[in-house]
Length: 63
View 1 (cartoon, one colour):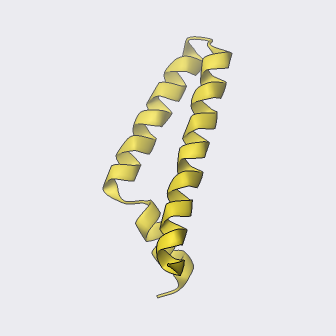
View 2 (cartoon, one colour; view 1 turned 90 degrees about the horizontal axis):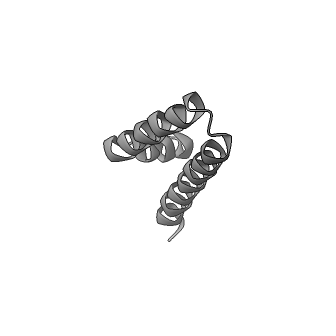
């Protein structure tokens, strides 16, 4: 199995997808409410969490 496929199969597990979907709903609510600062904070956290997850998964492949 190609490494990129294994990486993304690990990244998109059920728990991670549920968390990401909750993040997206919260982000949308902030946008609809006109809270640009809150939406920016939420998006930055969401992206940061994704990078942290990818880093942990990558570490598993190289440890």
